[in-house]
Image (tube, rainbow, N blue to C red; front, side, top):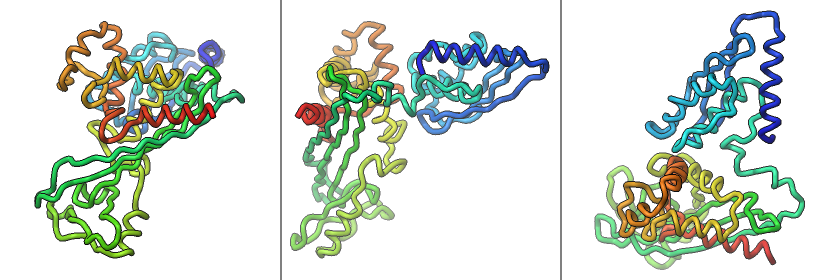
Length: 335
């Protein structure tokens, strides 16, 4: 739904409420998906006007998403509409609040965090689709408590739909990380080696250290592989600093929509660390990070803050190269 239609519906709702003879306040509730989970609001309407908006339940990050919770409800009341600016640095939570209020008012939101990765262009019949993959091996990090080295590999999968001009209409990433069984506990997919190699050091979650070795059998080999799950499938078990892998990846996907693959690469080169591939912040401490961050304008820093309020993980490091998978998806879409 475009902005004009959304305004018309909001005004129509106000007109309908004004036409009612009853002047009693109407208490409405709405819900939308926030950055950390469901976000719920209570909306009071009197004489066709929004007189109060309260966020009654949320799981947003303190000091980030809560900036929107503290200020956006009053802005909606003052405007008597959800046609207000999002709060800088808390874009995802802002959109969730607006969507929840629209839900309470019975108005279809123009874009909610849950569906912002599927714009109207996806309805076009001339989209080109492609699937890409990139794989990296990793030596480390380090060794376990008994000195056994840790090894892992990461495989990134990307499915994308592109407009005729190469702009991304829709994109989805997932990733499989598999490590030796002496690393990162039971939630990590593991691989001990092929049968006949003697097994590998086994990490004991309960004791917090390695304890023996894995069984060197064909059954164990098959069972390990059957238990592999991707980072999306791991869900809430795979949390990063402030959110799950899936939630952060969803935020990046939203950012990429509307850009070409070359523009995504250019964004990465300008706004991410040359060392660890993470989006820059004022606190980034890798070599060259502060010089790169200082070269940005204040407007660019604010735009970057909107990104890092939702996603801070690396797009390209020895954990996986998401940009390479995206480019391969574009190459396949042109075949």
